[in-house]
Length: 325
Ligand SMILES: C[S@@+](CC[C@H](N)C(=O)[O-])C[C@H]1O[C@@H](n2cnc3c(N)ncnc32)[C@H](O)[C@@H]1O
Image (cartoon, rainbow, N blue to C red; front, side, top):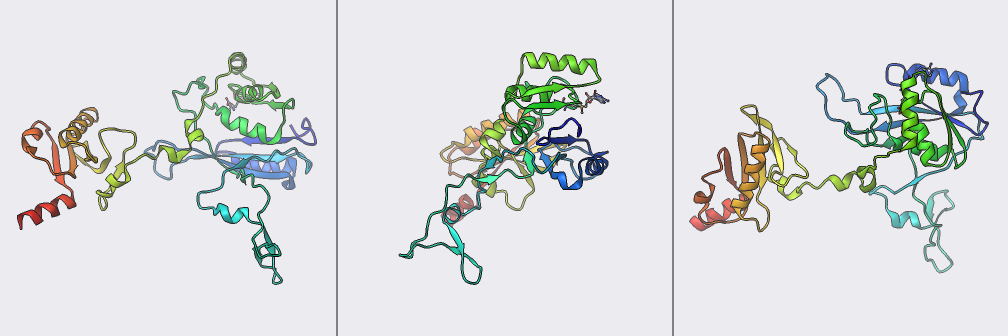
């Protein structure tokens, strides 16, 4: 591959954890340590497994160039939430003590800086793993997401450039190159892989990642107020479920204990119905409904909800106490 690469070309190597450290040493020998550019950490969320030890949730990709003259297109990403955008938009200079200070005009006003493009892409890439049901999946065990290959290709190639993957497997590199108008050559010793690559090239299917489009934070739609009622108890917050806000870590007779907090303006029997439905689906034998609003005829309505306990919110308990006294 080193022989075949152009002077401006780069190589990206992925190997699993059994051999990556050896691959890195070989790459240093072949390409020269000074041509090592980055170790890319491709990270993704995984379901937990029961194996002892840390849950593996990243892969390493080594990026080497053939020479210092390698082609590189900087990709910019957005600033972190903690960045003070106002501050970075203002021009800075050094004072007589070489300290970084705001640059000011003759009237003492702070000068604005050049247009900011964002932060250059880092070497940690959060790209979802192809889930088993993804449309893009072709059933090849080591298939990589097109999004990952596209990012690599955008970094070091332009339209019309030639990309080579000598271990193309299901052909993800070739498909990504085609989608980005690059030329490509794929090689694989398995005729099945070559056939599959041909098929994919005829009809490239790419799974859009809503996670990447909308950002991880957009999925965090837990009811934070509701969860504040559970401070001090161990629980898992539940997202995107109309019936429950949390599931306790503690179980009851091998079944999950579900929690719902009555929402603003929600009648208690409606909250209870939703919780009861969730209990049925999750095969839960015990649930807790936290009541936040005063209701009449509570017991008449509640009689049917087996296994459900109603707990009064502290505010409601206090208001009852005040009434009694
Ligand atoms: C990890 S897979 C590549 C998967 C690919 N990145 C994808 O997204 O589908 C490695 C591939 O290398 C092929 N391979 C292994 N040894 C080879 C060799 N000596 N020459 C050509 N291909 C080889 C295997 O058949 C396998 O398809």
